[in-house]
Amino acid sequence: MKKIVVTGGAGFIGSALVRALVNAGEQSPSAIDVIDNLSSGRESNLQEVRDRVNLHRLDIRDGGAIASAIRGADVVYHLAAIPSVPRSIDEPLLSHEVNIDGTFQVFRAAAQGGVRRVVYAASSSAYGDSEVLPKVETMVPNPKSPYAAQKLMGEHYASVFHSCFGLETVSLRFFNVFGPRQDPSSPYSGVLSLFMKHLLAGTAPTIFGDGEQSRDFTYVEDVAGLCVKAAHAHGVAGKMYNAGNGGCYTLNFIWDLMQKMEGVKITPLFGPPREGDVRHSMADTRSAAAELQHAPRVSFEEGLRKTLAWYRTALAVA
Ligand code: UD1
Image (cartoon, rainbow, N blue to C red; front, side):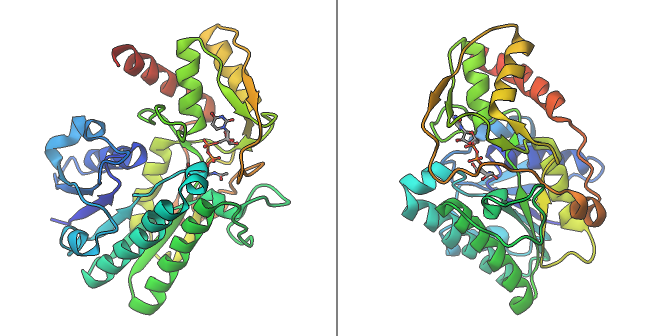
């Protein structure tokens, strides 16, 4: 039975990946080891699959502690991080320690523990502001925030752990992932989770800047599916791919769309542009399609509907 480890597996994206792995392995049930310090992840995110998961409440910065949980795994999906641009500006040391030092510890434990492959959650923020869209993997990165620089450093570590230590690694640059279970309770929460919360409460969200910035919002289950493909594809070790949808939506457009879906009219507030913010983001998905057989299944609008339905239930019981 092959061992699978998911760091950050109790988080929003990590728990979606765990569910995808459990569903994919229905014929031959295998346990999944989740490493999570529950700083932003929650055990309740794993509710439906809890009996198939060994939850190790560990911090990825603690190399000694995570080594035994990682040793002997076939695949490690490394998603644990402090995933926020503004938080990396407010707390640069903490996010550096988790996103760079912690990532190093995961790669080191994997290389020493005989792991076959690590799939690393990199970030579209590494591109910064490019002159052309879509953003393609061959572009020179141009990080605009500590978070972007940290995630890019993780890619470099992935690549050198492959070339120097023979560890198979694949980096996936996640493009603004959204979907059920994204926690809207922090000021650092992803914008769509905050929009959902305001929409259902009938209150005005704050849009930073003019709202004409755009993002390639990508549904969480599509990202989880791509992670699994990246773990098994041939000829991809040491490489990096975009994990996006190929779309591009402005915040103003999305807030309008959400109001129409809900049949309400709420004028948003506008605040100053956020430091470190990228203006436009849109993935070129051709490499992931050709080499990882990536084919997103959920359109942005459909993902938005599914997500809204989930928040309607979750926020009603909260
Ligand atoms: C960035 C990365 C993304 C990464 C994520 C981790 C880019 C293009 N994307 O997302 O790959 O996974 O960090 O968190 O760099 N906003 C508002 N009002 C709010 C909150 C946010 O207007 O209440 C705006 C932000 O200023 C930004 C956009 O919404 O322009 C998206 O913000 P957010 O959801 O935090 O994600 P990014 O910073 O784009």
